[in-house]
Length: 449
Image 1 (cartoon, rainbow, N blue to C red):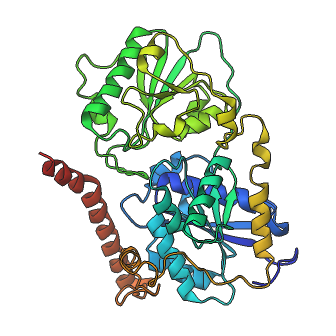
Image 2: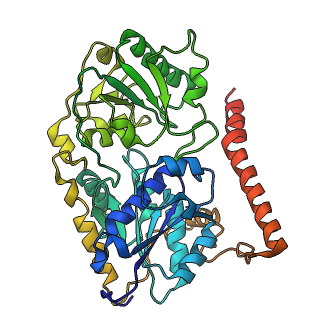
Image 3: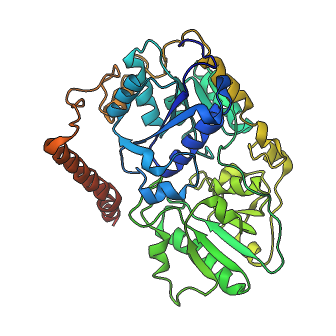
């Protein structure tokens, strides 16, 4: 890729995301990485939004509720993996941000490598939040990108250790921070006391555990009628986020005996706006805890269901935040451990403004290179012949990264035939979502009977 000068056209960036939270992470990451990169300013950076078609493809409502990411929802389009690769080939992007689950990142890396572009884009990927499970699996599926962002010093050290431990190049690991931190620091207000429980789609997983948490939250509202108690929900029934939610709290709340107290409410919307009025954030292990800590909002991580890897709250061991509903009911407010905070990228000390400086400089360096080397993921048909082909096939790619036969079909543009084809596509997408979001969870539950 030829070095950039101030006379060149706008820096062109593509963000490919597969869920609402990853869209938020990807779009904001693109903004932070390209602010001033290689002489670019906010005015001469063009960011294209692409959503990878699948079970968690966000709805227009979900796109609107992630908050302002600098890209209008109407300018975001849905694509298949093969369509995305064609777009990169045809559009000549300078930077591509892969805000995807690990397997999809690996597939796109191989697909991009197979394009053999004379001037390929800088490829960036990372994690949307706390990395508490599948560390090695997720990291090795992301290996091969030019930049693998770590949200904290703690994560950067772990990421490098995994890559070096398998003999893979760890130079792509770049420390930054969560891109969506921000907002005014918490200030207690007289006459206001708002407790918010940040729900998670898949943690905990069982009906009994979710009913327990809901019941305790409602009981907390009844014990403290002077407090506003909010259940912050990620999605409405039928919508999907990064993780599958088979037991929505909305449905469980309808079955609570005695109904809901007047000071208890279900809320949606942008987490930052909810935190504006939060005086205590309670969660099991949501990344919302890090947003809350960044703003110095009192934060509690529940131990009621144990401290377990399956719940993700083991990540908060040493944080000083672990507590139970019994203690919270009695008025306890955890105090975060400063040393733990310093390693988590929370940046409550005011250093957030410089958290992306190194990553931004790395992007500028890569953009200025005369030619980028070929993408070289750790997994290849030779190193993982029993694993990689299945990952690529899920995205209609062959083991060499090229589209499988039948995956490339010319898109009809205009005319009656094009309209009919697009209507069929839309109906198929609707049927697919209906199957994965409604029918599949029922079948899974029936299999557990």
